[in-house]
Image (cartoon, rainbow over all chains, first blue to last red; front, side, top):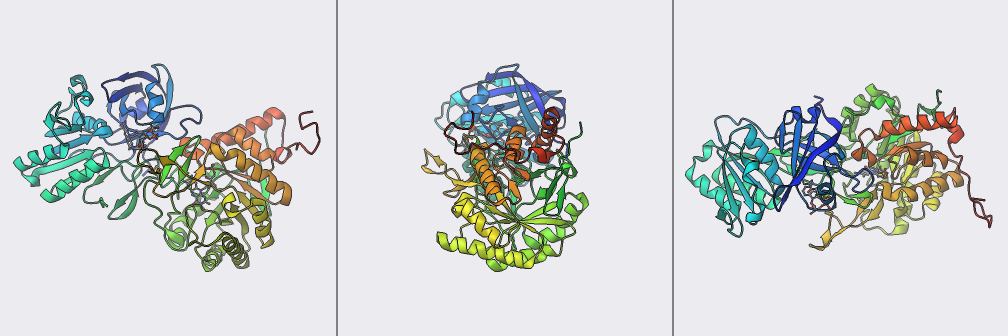
Length: 257
Length: 315
Ligand SMILES: Cc1cc2nc3c(=O)[nH]c(=O)nc-3n(C[C@H](O)[C@H](O)[C@H](O)COP(=O)(O)OP(=O)(O)OC[C@H]3O[C@@H](n4cnc5c(N)ncnc54)[C@H](O)[C@@H]3O)c2cc1C
Ligand SMILES: Cc1cc2nc3c(=O)[nH]c(=O)nc-3n(C[C@H](O)[C@H](O)[C@H](O)COP(=O)(O)O)c2cc1C
Ligand code: FES
């Protein structure tokens, strides 16, 4: 099973700030765009020299035709340098990597739960396949995505902010529980990506209600192709590589410490 | 112009000097999409231990200036799995295979050597990993550690007539001193350098950025140190040397060749450029053609030392 993975030199079409939290970067590459599914990711070499040295993983945020978009947050040196890149500059990009989300859990209503850098893959998922809800948790209104970025997401989008400045006040997990109380748990399928603490809380709730689902479990990565064993995830079948065996794992498989 | 890249080590013939550093090229075909393994001079495996090892918890890796720290902890499926599942794969590829081995006890080193001796049809040589920074030697002190290393090499030598490389790092003490001692116990060659132990601290949580206090530093950051060890070991002992430590592009590779390296193991660079090995190989051919070098051995070890002259080496 040799999945096709490509390593391309791409030209940046656009690299803009979309709100206080996220930047959006777009490039064109038929090979990187056409076969990608939500939950898969790209390994991007940000500088040409040794700074930063390793590639950085970013989820697919959107593809249309030959165009690929990523949505990223500045979290350190690499992402800061990425934010300083201009249209016309080039990047080396490898992908599509990893296994994505299950696209059609049979006969179930999908609830997507996103936070932080977990927002991009779930917006992509909601654009490709309709879900009942897309729940997004942030700290405050400043981090809420502009409407134009969410207009193609086929889901009812609800926000929770920790300071109550937008949507429901509190954590996204409280919002999730409120929704689950109204639904038949047997008909729900949860898909989540975001900070580990958030995903752990989501999985705990899912277990409480007996709901199935999947989480995109990110770990620091070096190679992104399963070679370095740097990104292991605890599962019931032993340690698995987030980059090659994941990053998406069924709740049932994950062993939460 | 055709350049002869043949590299000979004690009766072994490699069609070129390019190989991959242990633990940086997956366990079987992870890089098969990028690299035709048949084009490599040799393949060095991830370190194999007798029993399967789970390795360390996450996070295991973090980037540091021009390199990375890793605390993988020798995760591998163990000797039996390797024999059953990996040997047939490498046999099919046919590229000379150098198996990296490590034991937790002297008996385990002996066992590994005994078993691989029976697979001489596939295995060209052993690289005995004496220097993984991520496995604690049960709190033994420095001298004791040295003693154990020498016993390990001796045990391996007694069980196999395969070519044996001892993989070293400065963690073990003075590299030249240890190299002399392991060669004295029967090692055929030296592999330098394994990673150098380092640390990285998260200033907010004041914890290590890894799940361990220390990790092994690799990548361009360690290249000058690795280059010096290769040079010194070659000069002092004139034995076969496998070089690793930050080899990322053709210029790095040429520097190591000039100071005398026999095989060039590309490590962390594979993570950044999956095709790094083949790009380096092409680059070496181009360099030789341009310089009119017909055989790589004309270049190998051609370093012009500074000597003791008061004038320095640029006059
Ligand atoms: C499969 C996958 C998909 C990702 N998708 C996106 C995305 O779509 N958008 C986005 O903004 N970010 C995404 N990330 C996270 C992104 O890779 C990191 O933010 C980035 O590597 C940080 O690099 P840096 O040099 O800026 O920061 P560093 O200086 O390397 O690290 C700064 C901070 O970021 C954290 N970090 C580093 N690497 C990762 C990582 N791999 N995952 C999570 N946190 C990390 C560190 O723990 C540290 O707190 C994804 C990560 C993975 C593994
Ligand atoms: C992720 C990773 C895993 C490694 N695993 C091993 C190993 O199992 N056995 C070993 O002898 N060396 C191991 N090494 C060390 C490399 O083989 C190499 O000697 C070292 O990284 C220096 O070369 P480099 O700077 O080109 O990576 C590992 C290095 C890295 C980065
Ligand atoms: S990042 Fe190297 S194995 Fe996953």
